[in-house]
Image 1 (cartoon, rainbow, N blue to C red):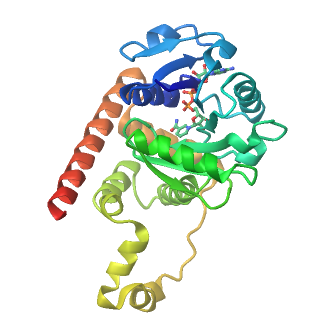
Image 2: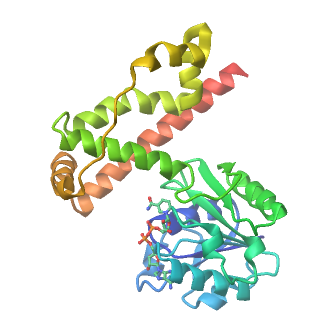
Length: 287
Ligand SMILES: NC(=O)c1ccc[n+]([C@@H]2O[C@H](COP(=O)([O-])OP(=O)(O)OC[C@H]3O[C@@H](n4cnc5c(N)ncnc54)[C@H](O)[C@@H]3O)[C@@H](O)[C@H]2O)c1
C-alpha cells in the first residue's frame, strides 16, 4: 500500500487526507494542532505529531501548511530528508512559486506545486506547476497519482505567481468588488447573476470554447469583430480603503460564524456533487 504524508491538517489537508484514504493509500497526517486526532475522526488516517516520523518511507508528500514561504521551505526540507529517496514532494500553495519553495532543497527535482481547489476531495482540478528544476518524470508521476485519485490534473508549461486558476480568480474578484463599491449591485445579486450565467456556462464548457460558440458558425473571430468590438471600456479597480464596506455587505448576505459556515459549506458541497453527477450522466449518454 503506498504511503502519503499529509503535512498540515487545516481546511485543505483534512480534505486531501479523506481523498487519499478513500483511494486506498496509507495516510499519515502531521500538524501541531492539539485537536489533530479529533479533526481526523471518520477518516482512515493516522495522526502522527512528529513530522520526521510521519514522513518516514512516504511515497508521496502533500504539504498544506500556512501560506508562509519560510515555513513551507522548512517543511519541504524535512520531507526531502525523511521521505523515500524518490518520493514526490507536492505543495498545495495557492500562489508561491515552486522554484522559491525548493530553493536550496536537495530534492528540488522532486518538488512541484499540486494546487487543488477547495475542497480537494470534491473539486476535480489539480494544477501541477513545476519549477525549472522539477524533473519531467516527476511531473508525469504526480499526474498519474492525482488522476488515480479521480482528479483532473492540468499541467502548466511554466511556473507563474498565482498559477492560472488564481490569476483568473483574482481578476474576477477584483471586478466583483469594484462593481459593489461603485453601488452597481449587491454581493448576493452578483452571485445570483454569476451562478445563472458564467458559472453554469463554465461548468459545461470553458471560456474559450464559450467565446468560439458565441460567435455562431463564424466562431471566435466573428464574436471579436461583432460583440467584442464594443467592449472597449476600462474595467476599473476596487479601492482597498472601501473593502470594509464590501466585507460588511457579504457578511450581511451570508452571515458569519461556525453554524453559518457549516450550513453554507454543506450546501456548496451538495450542489457541487449534483453538478458533477449530472455532467457525468450527460457525458455517458453522449458516448
Ligand atoms: N483554503 C483554500 O481555499 C485553499 C485552496 C487551495 C490551496 N490552499 C493552500 O493550502 C494550504 C493550506 O491552506 P488552508 O486553507 O488549509 O489553511 P489552514 O490555516 O486551514 O491550515 C493550515 C494548517 O497548517 C498547520 N500548521 C502550522 N504549522 C505547521 C507545521 N509546522 N507543520 C505542519 N502543519 C502546520 C496549522 O495548524 C493548520 O492546521 C495553503 O498553502 C493554501 O494556500 C488553500
